[in-house]
Length: 324
Image (cartoon, rainbow, N blue to C red; front, side, top):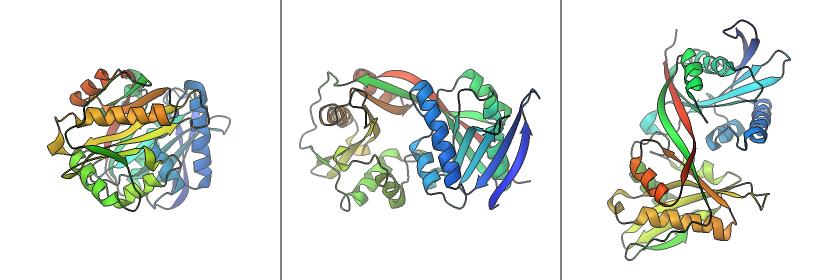
């Protein structure tokens, strides 16, 4: 399936017609629509709906990247779903993200997710994992109407900065920032060891890292590495949001990892505290945030001990699509 084709679908209650357009691969037009819808969401609830991977794929789509656009009765875009092959070898699937304007029909989500399924049917099938931010039981019903079921739950947690916490570094451990063109190989080794078969962070290759380093927000100074006499033991990779608003700068622990043989040494706590300190002291962030799997009880306990509280949760909805 290449190029643009059009599939018209009706809302389940037959009162609103939603036109669904599937484009593979997406073009600059779909990128513009996605960014516009995401900005409308941000203006309404303070945060966007497209994650970093979705934005990166829309900017540089591959041959199997897909955009599903929902047009309302006035022919204006009211929602968009993005889907692309997941780059992690340990969990081969098609990762999807959805954004819709606040005024979109309540069940436009179902139409967009059906569009994802139809696109996969036309392009060889496969497993789709679609993340929905601030998902509710109503979201579950809408996703289920498209054949999806909940597979994972992820919390967004936040804390005021600076945090009132300290941690003793494991003996012989020192910190420094990531050095591009020097640290890629050792970081990939520790990341993949720390995350094993994690569906998002595991089995990264250099292309995954290079893509993130190419993002506008990438700051090597905020990519903190912890070394001991055996080499790299862990890392805390930070990210800053709202860089043009000094009063509302938001810092994120983008990803934090510890090489398995260093677990239980206090390194994870020290990494988190140092990362949050960098965000507060160097970047001037007044709040810190992160995402963590609801099933990761060890990480949840650590973050709660640092003052983090759950803001809301996202859910991953999955479906296995077969070709006709």
